[in-house]
Length: 218
Image (tube, rainbow, N blue to C red; front, side, top):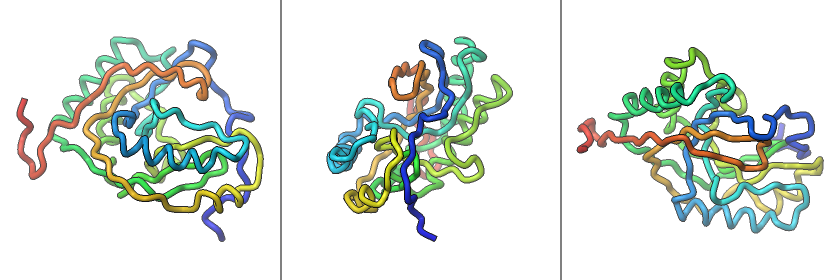
């Protein structure tokens, strides 16, 4: 069986989204400050520009989703602050993490760059999940299959049904690889429909550990 989809579909055809102004909280690694990530995303998006029905991720909001925390209807500003405080404590001894981007993933709803190794970001995911659950008692899980998290950077979303083959042939399965060192994770309020990109970072948590187990200098 081919690991690639035969058809792309409309991601938002029957997807339930927040109303205008209604927010949903995510833990994201924001990547817009890394020029090598913007460059590899630009290269891919330029190769895809000739195809209809692809909604490109803005360079400002290139990201890796770590965890969905929940709706702002259920999470107060004080609880957001508490989640950030908890995550800061939990990640205070965790050193920055380096991942490699370049391998392309295809999904019926999106085209993505894999972040490898796939378990490199697991300490961040575990920390923000613990921080979230300690405050609100739950979370809304990870994107995709909740039993097998595959961290990734979404390049674009599909907005129409169309054959995947021509797109896969045009972009391929590999781009020139780049490495990115991740030293923070952000709590972000995403307001309204997903493709409106009305994002408001609430706060960031920095990975302050040193390699080899030494404490970070403050």
